[in-house]
Amino acid sequence: MSEEHLKLTLKAIKERFGLKESQLMSFPPTLEAEPEKIVDICQALRDEFGFNFLCELTAVDYWPEEAPRFNVIYGFYSHENNVRMAVRVPLGGDQPTLPTVEGIYRGANWHERELWDMFGINITGHSDLRRIIMPHDWEGHPLRKDYPLGYEEPQFTFNYDEIDQRKHHARYEEA
Amino acid sequence: MQEPVEVNYQELKHLVSERALQGDTVLLNMGPQHPSTHGVLRLLLELDGEVIINCIPDIGFLHTGIEKNMESKRWEMAEVMTDRTDYLNTTGNNLAYCLAIERLAELDVPPRAQAVRVILVELERISNHLVWLGTHALDLAAMSMFLYCFRERESILDIKEMCSGQRMMTTYFRPGGLWRDIPADFEIAVRRFIRMFPSRIKQYDALLKKNPIWLDRTRNIGKISAQDAINLSCTGPVLRGSGVAYDVRKAQPYSGYEQYDFVVPTGTHGDVYDRYLVRMEEMRQSLRIIQQALDKLPYGPFRSNNRKYVPPPRAELGTSMEAVIHHFKLWTEGFNIPKGAVYQPVESPKGELGYYLESNGGNKPYRVHMRTPSFVHLQALPFMCKGHLVADLVGIIGSIDIVLGDCDR
Image 1 (cartoon, chains in turn brown, cyan):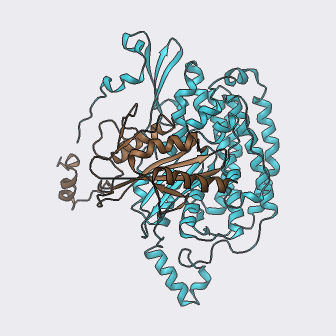
Image 2: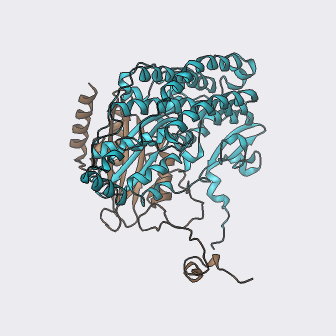
Image 3: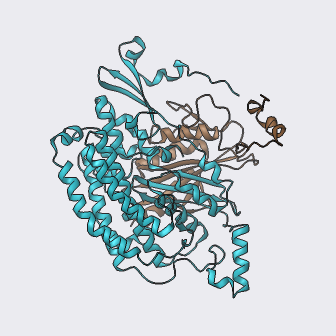
């Protein structure tokens, strides 16, 4: 019953919006959509196909590739039919922008803030687009692949210069 | 060093009501060091007298960059970091991560390992609920509960220590099975616990269930309807307290949950008291699952025989050249997982915990994302606490059962 529903939904959505299936995801079944269609897809999924639950919203960075640089993944669940599906949205690297789905799934609010905070994906129409996890005056978007994984160097007597190069503020000063 | 920049009030203006700008209402900061916020959660409250008009959660004080860090570690090393997210549900996090890897790599798990995983995860669920109950009751001034709950939790931690050598951060589940077989007296210890525990739940009920102060402080507080809860992506006891019987263990069974007979408890009102009842019943159901899993605990290997992912047993190393090669390969460069991505949900004590893993074919995760219940539930907090008193807010925070390490990752 539920598997049947999933098959029909995938087929209907694919035909209506002209999407193709994503080969990457092994679970759940995934479609690939353009960013401008995502609001309509969410609306249709929630209102017509019973996918009333946004279970996850995240992104992947494929830097140094530029087109598409990001993939945003929307995961849906239907309480009624007990099935899952997902939609992947490829985004270019130059000022990535997505419309908000907050109006359809209210739970998307913080997830979209996280996308902005961690990946620098601009969400248009969002009610409260501030940084959520990093401090408000942080520079850069930490989960991008071109953002270095910061580290703390243990300080020994022989590597002062090396540390000074990376961290001026930790300069060793002779007493 | 970068100079800190103060928050401009224009940035926050849209979050408070018009009256706050005229000085009619008071803005009050709660946390991040407030003991009742269960960690480093900061709330900005807009108050009219004692009534909450707006609540603005501010998270991120415990952000440790775990997702970013995992990308630079090999698959089996990254698992150690999953323990550190939700530190009250460590084996549960390991389970979600291992299941995601197993799904991605199409790795088999022997039945014995699955049953042991279920037992440990259900024990962990009880232990998580005990910490929740203790601290939640402590917030609402039932002081003695805290001591009783931590007494029982101690015996669960002992069982975990017996298996893995660690009380909390076990990393006992590995992709393909377990780190080692369970010790000989594991079964005795677990049986002793499940014999002792039902009477303890009765004690807790005697202390709280019909306690008039407890009822006053929890009934009709922090209500959320099923419709709103679903729309806000709530799962776990918060959603079940509102009457939706959604449990990943039942809906999409993993690790052999389909063999066990248990009930998914639900509430009706969606208030703090119903969430309390749901969690208490879940502890009883967990005991049932543990009992069934122990009774039919199968014999056999405790980890997969797939040598591309799972190290060979110690005994083989002396006799088999192949085993030495596999061992060497696994401990020097780890295993490679074919290119792909997967979203694996499990039912953690707090709600649906989902791991999104993506592999580019290498020996490190390309992307790890945790859909953590604490993060999602905190988002629903402002909707639950509007119109309540500040004193009720601590009850509501307690009832959604957050762990900030889980929330900020």
